Image 1: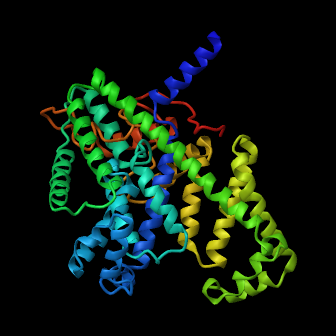
Image 2: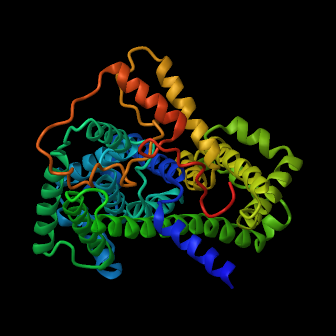
Image 3: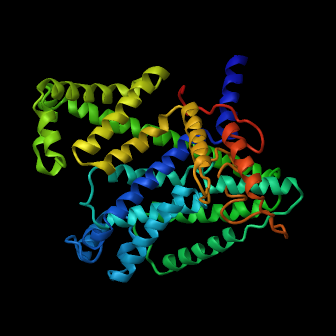
Length: 445
């Protein structure tokens, strides 16, 4: 009995004491922000026809649909071209900043707003990957995905080093950003523009209030009781969202696999043959024809796809099998991107699969990236793959709302000092100078 109680208490302490999977959530953040950014940039010349006033799915049709389903989109606030261009530009900007990990919590909210605004404006634009981006953009808001590989983590590390030298750190950008977004949120709420489904408005207000509370509590120091309580709540929310992300990826593969089993073309091993002969899915006709002409290869790919998708959720309980199937699935999506011309669908699925990557591999990947960056000439661009986890678990240096309320700015270390800090962080994955050790995400990695 004592053993059970001890095990339960350890599990509770693990869930509440730290945000699990910092590297996994970071790579999911980078993957989905990069996928959405690349899509927006590729469709930049066609943006008006896809989501703007020039879309065949006109503003009146979109308004009728949204009135029925209550979906959120900022593009319904105006049907003008200028407003559409502003929303599209903000979607691009938030994707870039989320990719770099600057003010990660705030950018994750703006990223979600951009994704929902564009996708809910024209519901027929997508290739399947848009559904995954749609869901993950909401889940990312609930995670502390800026713990590593982010500008937030680098800023928090430098702030901690400055405080250790007795220098008080002031964050002016955070409070200004919080006030500006708060004013915008109050304005759109008072104007009745957030009418409809309650979830997105409630999430926006909850995040805005929590960031202000985080900044206010952070003024009392990291060891204060309110700050510890907020850390526990944030860790619970993060870990719950991480489980949901993992469950979502499993659900996608499980449903896809079981539906395929019921199809006659998947049962006789010929299903892959047919899309290879569709012009829409043949960016490289010669490659598609060569693959379709090999009946044995078509049969192996057809049965292999079903087997991998059905087996993957069960393989998570065995580290070696899971890693092997994960590599196969990522390779399969890369092949789909080339042969069927679905690059953004494949990137979205690979980003979702990345939540199951082993922590040891991701830490090595961060180290390789840092060393590669060190060999490049100039080295003037920001270091994102530094590998350090910040003190508050999100890399905000006291939250998006601000710092510790001190009066003197921290001095910026010189280039050699910065390189030394970054190299040490990349090698150790330090949390305020301590090695956190390997981090696992629910299953053995």
